[in-house]
Image (cartoon, rainbow, N blue to C red; front, side):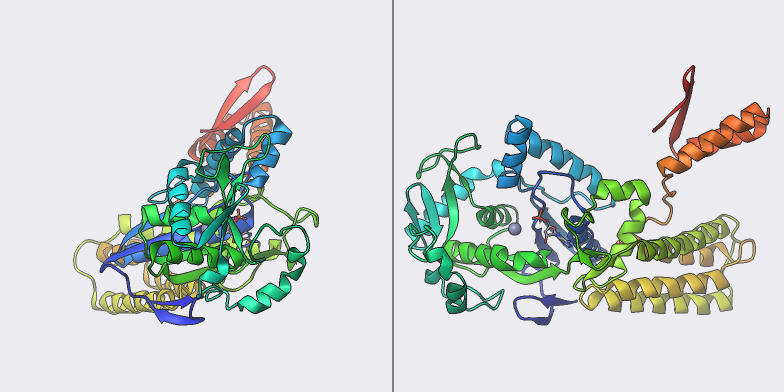
Length: 469
Ligand code: AMP
Ligand code: ZN
């Protein structure tokens, strides 16, 4: 498989550190609010990478953290008058729900920064012992210039960075030896969560968290480190500096970064009023559609989110699901016995589509091309599978292939589309009218349709109440 490696700026052949195994670390969200649809992009993309590796027979150790100690979490906790962990625990739970709805599989491990503080302190101690870090008034800084490879990921030059940081030198940050030094450990402020350390009560710096959690759950060297492109500098550059200086070995072999999601060609931001959480979007669209939409572009390209584009994905996904349902029916009505010679030829065509799909995925996870191949396959099965005529053996092959290629993308062809609130309310209204008109057959039909979609109705004196099962 070829992977575009941010470290080398080219597509490199993927070679695992240990045969048949792959360790992937993906920087996870800071849990101070519901995740937004931009955050969903790396989750979906790298979950798909994991699924593809598993399809190829690799054993994947997939680690993605929750950053549960951070200025934004503390700010929210102060506003609400609760402890920071009340905020972070709440949004970890909400984030897990969103991930499940996006069909993002549970990671092998989802470490939380606050549960790994001892190892963070140990890494800071190692860095101090090795001369890569120093303490001033309870803050520990990384001595950036000591690490000669600094800038190798972001291709930044230390002197240019220093020129850009000149204002820092005169802005009171003069306790640092150098403007480029960054924080590993910071002293607590009043009302903030803190831990005991050799440098007094305080908390870790954000970059340190990922260096420590990836080391603990994967090892000193990891195969693939991933995240959004905004993390290249300074987050990932700093992770490399800390890990390589502390462990004395290379940190991550391949660095993968997803492009940004934009809304109607603008940066998503609260101030522009075009900021959407996954939860809000889930009320308008089935999140399977959102997943399919995200994978319809190459992960490194910027992706524009607009109603028209999402509608197009919705229709595309519907086309695939309709074909899958038809083929599944043909399986149950399949003729027993051997495939016909024409069917055998058609199997060869299906196998060619599988090879083409794999070639797209092997080319730096080109899910956009892989989806085009699925559409070609849909066209092929639509014309070659006929219920009551095709053999069960052929219909099976067509169905299994279509299902598998979609499964790798995390798209479940069998899943029934979720009804939106307004659709449910519309159906309930229709049922009420049918009952008034004494059309009980239609009323019952609507009730069973809703039951089938997991909606439970309750007739009360105040009217009809409903809930999702
Ligand atoms: P954060 O919680 O801000 O650290 O973000 C969690 C992950 O979401 C990181 O990998 C970010 O790079 C990624 N991310 C944030 N905003 C976007 C966006 N608009 N498009 C794509 N990825 C994003
Ligand atoms: Zn990270």
